[in-house]
Each structure stands twice: as C-alpha cells, then as structure tokens.
Length: 193
Image (tube, rainbow, N blue to C red; front, side, top):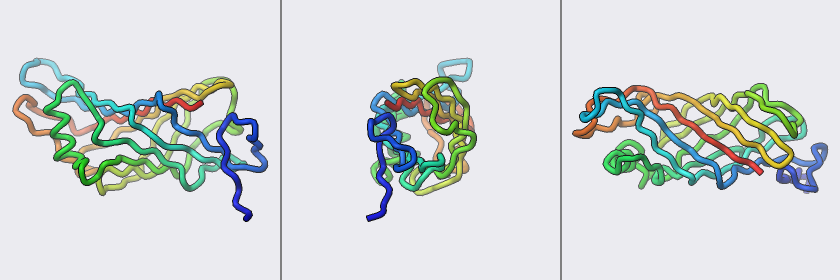
C-alpha cells in the first residue's frame, strides 16, 4: 500500500522525507485546571486546582511540518483530583458527568509558528489550534505553548482559558464555596521523549 509510515520522533528510522513523524505524549505529562473561587472560610479568593497524570495522545506531522489527522490528546476526566474531595465529586457527577463522558479530548488541527524541522535545542513559543471537547460540547480553542527542545526530549507547557458558559459546564454549587469565577485556566505540562 502507499500509506506513509508513521515513525516516532528521534527513532533511527526517522527520515523526514519518507515518513510522518509522531510525537507521543509521555507518562510524565500532567493536565490541570485552575479556577478562582471564594471559599466560606477564607477572606481572599483561592485557586482551585485539579490535576491528573492520566493524559495520552500524540501529534503527527507530515514532511513539511503540517499537523495530520489522528493528532489528539485525551484526559481521563474521572481522575482529576484537587485538595477537596467534595469539589472533585461534584465535578465528576455534575460538571463533567464523567461516567457518561469519561474523556476530555483535544483534536489538534493546526499549529502556528511551530519550528520546522523540529529543532534539537532551544526554547520556542507557538500555538496549537483545534477542537476541545468536554462532555458533548466541542469548541475551537488555541493553546499557547512554550517548548524546550533537546536531543533527547521535548518538554513544555500549553495553556488556554475557557469559560463555564461556553462549554455549558455547571459551576460547582457547594455550601463551602461562596462563588466561582467564570474562567477556567487549562494547562498541559507535556513531556515527549
């Protein structure tokens, strides 16, 4: 068949001219959310932060650095954990409905100003643009990404801001939380080797 082979970045059979290149999100990657909220017991606003290491995915490029179909990342919605189990339960049961929608996914469609060919040193800023799906709501989002390239790995952080309203997410409504900000900051700390 004439399908182009997909090879992992940094493998001996990496030939940009003959293959698609796949960057696999490594096991040391972390996805997190941060929302400012006003708690009953604190006078100042508090950042509610939930994290998970259950992140998988890959980005596939063709020979000229264009992102290819099959480039996506997935986060286990059930595994997001903050410092407050009541908040986590509310998010799982009501906000994310993770029994019915276990994954939060980001399908990457294009990148803007990603260095190509992929460098073996230096730190670069670029955007990853695509469809973010939370439950059954999908929107186009742009992640601001900073990545440091070395001969052995790529490490970086991608961030974006969404609102409860645009993704139709129910805000946590719990006795110990007075109010919750409209904006949610999402971060992916990724490690590719």
